[in-house]
Image (cartoon, rainbow, N blue to C red; front, top):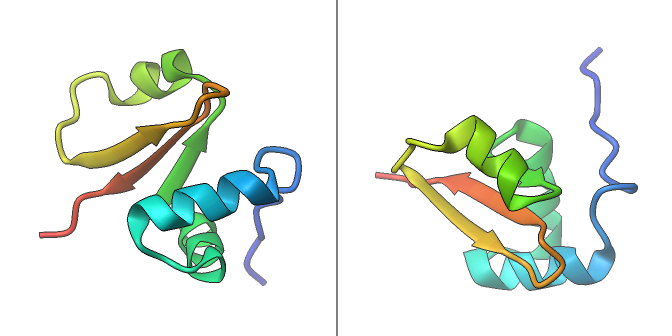
Length: 75
């Protein structure tokens, strides 16, 4: 059985809706992409930069509360 990631402590429903609009997805589809690992959420820009400091193949957005969502750019 596949382990499911619990996003309830990390992502608020308003954030989910806002980010889904940025990426042109429905909130449900965004949740599926998060579960698959295609989209990641970081609690701060520092956390994001420590993992992806030199990566250029990401589309990312930072919310006004500091959280960063990243998605691999599809070619």
